[in-house]
Image 1: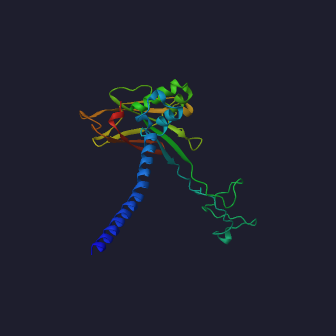
Image 2: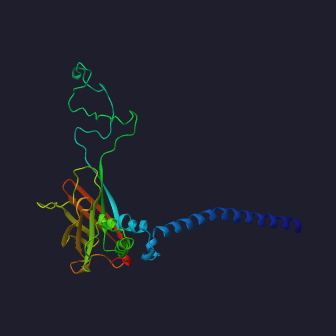
Image 3: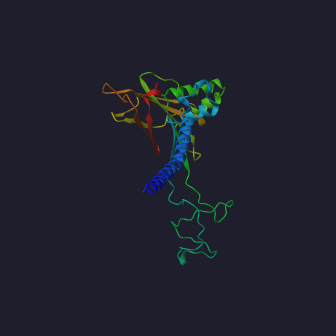
Length: 272
């Protein structure tokens, strides 16, 4: 009986050890993965643990171009009625026989068949619609201001000019800059100012407290560096527009033939 109990105890011990080993083998890769992800997240949020004086050119540009305070919003241009979203050579298929001329061309009206670019193969990927990239940047954030200062320290004056920073940061305003980053088509210049006129643009800022309009609007730059800056109030009906903790704000801009909407998640630790 004693021998039997000893054998049972040994097997039970081995079984528990096997389960612990299996659990460890399952948990260990997960721990490694989570540790790796945390390191990646830490590397991405370099502004949280790295002094601005040590930021590289790429890091400073990332803050003013692709960060929690700088978002690229894509706008797809609508196609004209006679344009196709992509090229499909159909010859005389789907064409009334009476609409085919003596040369074998289909003359049927309102038949969509965009010509294929001679540089493309017949089975090439579809031609995508033209699109524009509009950069929306929340300027009232300390890392953004520090990034522009760092770019100047690095001698990147041209990069600063092209990114169109706000000319001022009033303490009683939230400032949002909008600029065209990818025009998409030749005639699309939504923020360019001419001697005769300024573009007609309607901007609003929405938070959980409500919606406000800009108190001031200022255009800067020319050509590819043309930008528009919106100065929104920090209060609504006497109360702060943003809460004391983490909050969000949604910026909307409507212009001639286009609309942009950009939502920011804002950490009060980095607001200025």
